[in-house]
Image (cartoon, rainbow, N blue to C red):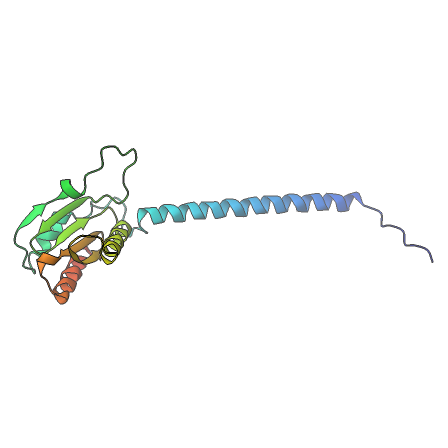
Length: 178
């Protein structure tokens, strides 16, 4: 028995293999590039606090003082104090702006209202406040709720019942439109 002769290589087969290799490399690069682009957009969207709905160029979000004025119509809010300078001041030695810095704050005799740049930032700030309260940090917050780009904080001395706090948070969401 004779051994089978080795198949002869064809220059067409080698060329086809080279073309397929180039296609595979370019396809992989395109897939990698698209994946990186999608990942970058997802990170940017998460940093902005979620997708923004509505037309671009819309008016600035409602401030804490404006929300207090709306809530005063249905809730027993008497005295109020603008605490924006106290709570929302940028630290002097910071090179980069703090993404969790509030835009305005208002203390009342019933609730503390803090406004943030976006819904996502407010949600994260509210979560951090609840964790600090449950973690045993020394502060007198009784309840914390998010209402769109606001965080409503009820302190122990405010004395509102659970149902009253829920109603106020719902009214705040309704006033802001989320």
